[in-house]
Image (tube, rainbow, N blue to C red; front, side, top):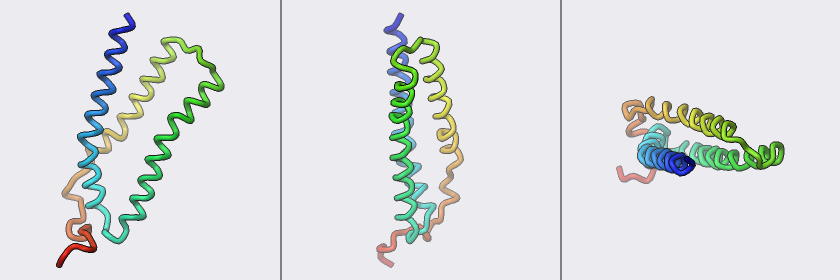
Length: 116
């Protein structure tokens, strides 16, 4: 009974990976085209810092939960944790649907070093 659940989790993680890989370049392009050239570096630093903070928050939370609860989890508890994580993933995924190239800045976002 455990093997099918493991394969389902692997398939779900693979699907999330495919989604993240497919939308990542589009989001980066729209982000870059939505910011004036002179203001980009400041926002890219903030974006990178928030991404690093987000990547660190999960393991830190895991350490805290492990220290408080211990390493004895029941299947029901794990299902709740996995479902909560999946639910949190929906919000940024829905935000991607609101992106539009029509709202980009166009020429205002061009490189400062571009030939005239």
